[in-house]
Every structure is written in C-alpha cells, then in structure tokens.
Length: 197
Ligand SMILES: *[C@@H]1O[C@H](CO)[C@@H](O)[C@H](O)[C@H]1NC(C)=O
Ligand SMILES: *[C@@H]1O[C@H](CO)[C@@H](O)[C@H](O)[C@H]1NC(C)=O
Ligand SMILES: *[C@@H]1O[C@H](CO)[C@@H](O)[C@H](O)[C@H]1NC(C)=O
Ligand SMILES: *[C@@H]1O[C@H](CO)[C@@H](O)[C@H](O)[C@H]1NC(C)=O
Ligand SMILES: *[C@@H]1O[C@H](CO)[C@@H](O)[C@H](O)[C@H]1NC(C)=O
Ligand SMILES: *[C@@H]1O[C@H](CO)[C@@H](O)[C@H](O)[C@H]1NC(C)=O
Ligand SMILES: *[C@@H]1O[C@H](CO)[C@@H](O)[C@H](O)[C@H]1NC(C)=O
Image 1 (tube, rainbow, N blue to C red):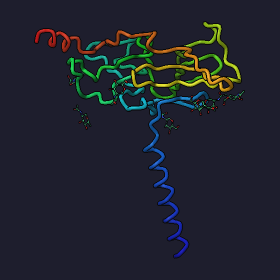
Image 2 (spheres, rainbow, N blue to C red):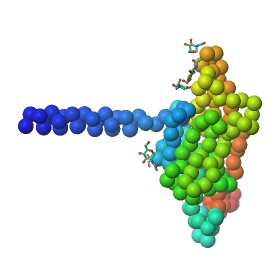
Image 3 (cartoon, protein in one colour):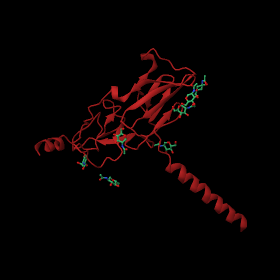
Image 4 (cartoon, rainbow, N blue to C red):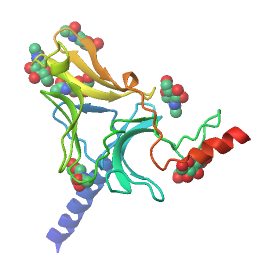
C-alpha cells in the first residue's frame, strides 16, 4: 500500500516534470546536431515570429504535381490571426524556404545542419539544400559551433561561432532570399478588395 502510494507520487512528479519541460520547449535556436521536424517550432526571442512547417491547401481546382496540398517551411508572425496597422493580413507567411519545391509528406521532414550545410530532408525526395559549404570558401571546422537562429526581425540566420575567438559569422540568412510568398490558392481576391476600399 505504502509502496504504491510512493509510486503514484513518483509518477505524478515525473508527469509534472514532463509538462514543465514541454511548456518551456519554445526555443529560438537550432544547434548543429539537434533535430527539427514537422512537430517543432522556433520562436524568436520576443515571441514575435515563428518558424514551422505548414500544410498549404491550394484551393479549388488548383494542384501542384497532382496534389491539392503541400508542406512548406514557413516563417509567420506568431500572432497570425490579426492584421497589422497598415492592414496587411498577418496570417500570410513572411517567408517560405521551399516555395518552388513543396514537400509531399509531413512525416520524416527534418531540418539538419551537417558538414554539407543547411538542408531540409524528406521522405521520397531529394533534400532541399538551403546553404552549402561547397558554394562558399567556408568549411566547417571543429573550432566552430554552427547554429540556426530565428531573430525578432523575422530573419532566419545560419551563423558560425568561433569558440576560441568569440567571432560570429553569418553564413546564410533568409533576408537574402526574399520570397514572393503568394502560393497557389492564396487569396488574390482579398488583396484586390483591400485595394477597392
Ligand atoms: C518529431 O520528433 C519528436 C521527438 O523528437 C516526436 O515525438 C514526434 O512524433 C516527431 N514528429 C513527427 C511528425 O515525426
Ligand atoms: C487573413 O487571411 C486568412 C486566409 O487567407 C483569412 O482566413 C483571415 O480571415 C484573414 N484575416 C484578416 C484579419 O483579414
Ligand atoms: C488571436 O488568437 C488568440 C487565440 O486564438 C487570441 O488570444 C488573440 O486575442 C487573437 N488576436 C487577435 C488580434 O485577434
Ligand atoms: C568548439 O566547440 C565545438 C562544439 O562545441 C567543439 O566540438 C570544439 O572542440 C570546440 N573547439 C575549441 C577549440 O574549443
Ligand atoms: C553553440 O552556440 C549556441 C549559441 O550560439 C549555444 O547555445 C550552444 O550551447 C553552443 N553549443 C556548444 C556545443 O557549444
Ligand atoms: C519584437 O522585436 C521586433 C524587432 O525588434 C519588433 O518589431 C516587435 O515589435 C517586437 N515584438 C514584441 C512583441 O515585443
Ligand atoms: C567570449 O565571450 C564571453 C562573454 O561575452 C566571455 O565570457 C569569454 O571570455 C569570451 N571568450 C573569449 C575566448 O574571448
């Protein structure tokens, strides 16, 4: 009896601990060696923007590669149900990593920082390489700590931190690759109507 009571208390403590761990899981940085899948998100330090995988339905009679939806790695304003002071609809993504290359299946998508660079891997398709060390004069070395940081400005930055000199170098940033984020099925009409007003 006493033992089972202790067991219950122990279980409760473990559950409470798990709950707390999950509650504080929002992070703004993905370090080399860490995994980021379709259940994960990065939230910038002040909470203004979020990086996550989204499912985009293309709308009636619209398809891409024979499918009516695709998965995209997107940056959104975190509070994406409102509109900004200039009337811009905040629910539209600020940036898409793979606008021209939608992902068919949400299982097995991962963002990975490895010796080749920064990429999105997926089931049944080629990886989407966002940054490649081969394309630059840089190369990963043991003296560098490489991480992906989502900044409050909405910029996603792959940076290299030399731990023996404290110098941080930007390897790649989403601001250099702005996307015209209009996807098939996104409401052109709502833009049109806001013009009319
Ligand atoms: C993502 O990874 C976590 C563990 O790190 C796992 O619990 C979850 O099921 C994964 N999500 C998907 C969609 O694979
Ligand atoms: C923004 O657009 C989405 C879908 O395109 C729509 O559901 C939502 O109501 C719009 N929000 C505002 C504030 O206009
Ligand atoms: C957005 O939605 C959240 C929860 O769904 C709500 O708390 C918040 O007030 C909403 N914000 C706006 C601007 O509608
Ligand atoms: C720098 O940090 C990386 C990652 O933590 C580590 O593997 C490496 O040994 C460190 N190098 C030096 C010179 O401290
Ligand atoms: C790598 O750098 C990030 C921040 O720049 C830091 O949070 C993390 O602990 C570092 N990782 C290692 C293994 O040093
Ligand atoms: C977060 O930081 C950005 C950029 O500095 C700023 O524009 C935004 O208003 C801030 N948001 C909050 C909720 O503090
Ligand atoms: C790096 O910066 C941290 C904090 O700014 C400092 O404590 C540390 O001594 C610095 N290391 C080197 C090698 O300059």
